[in-house]
Image (cartoon, rainbow, N blue to C red):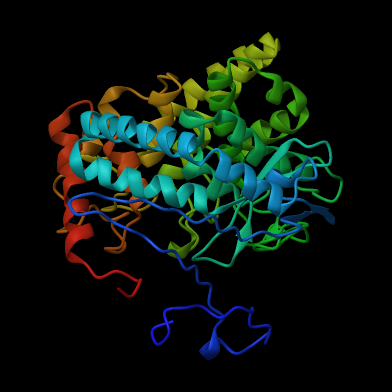
Length: 422
């Protein structure tokens, strides 16, 4: 093209080929641009797959093709609707950015707009056999697991806020799998396989053993997400559909949740930890959420039982975890601390199981532990996780504390190297 100004007339059909001779896509357009004016053109490009996900050995079409639509028809429709969709997108971006700036300031807005893209991009959206949506996230920096429950958990506020139907599309495959006789454990699964094959758990002990699983973590995650989704949707149809499973997982947390055994949590890179105080918070709030679901589905006996149980466990938690001016990483570990990011659900769901003094004590202590680019995950190492830092920051009731925790993340964005070559 540089020599002649023209593209070849024929496609290069020499496929497949080595990466050092990667195939190219090129479009030629002639533009006449008058002085002091602008001209805009666009190109429709689709990367399509005839099949998107294999779920329990059923091969599912991508959601856009659920009614038999071809790539050609899809592209034609996209081009016809381009102007209207582009305007809607621009308007949406402007309104959302303005809200993010108003709610959390410029650093928060930058992080949230990046998270918006990443949260959606990591998902495969497929159509079930009846055409209903099923959505499957992929772990990108772990072992490639699909539909990982503790990946659904940190992304759930996004879908709760923008479109709870998509959270239901994520949770349904997990619940259908957990209801099968092949899943024999009394707690929730960790994953459904390795992307794009959602044919059964591969993490830890898989379907064979409890070794290296996340029983309290995933059971708590599922109860919290389903309760929050019911709130967002304004009904309890999902909880009713899978009620026996939820009862089983609540019973497991009743037995194991207050003082967890030597288990992994979502922060599995930190290794196993017994008596995990933050994991205990998750279990307690999850049982409070279960009590609300029980009331919603009409089981007043269980609602009363678990509401009382969660309140009692929260009081015991304070006694077990308190250490002077903060709360411990683990109940049996002196001179330790950790981010108690799971407390956000106590506020989000209005459970009020933990007194405000717990989060206020923690937030005051965190200010003394801040590093140049943010707050460490806990006292063991100086690494951290961006999602949990933001969750921890949202515990703050005042803007000063919120920005104290969030603003160092802006320095991290600007001053540290990226993994992606520029």
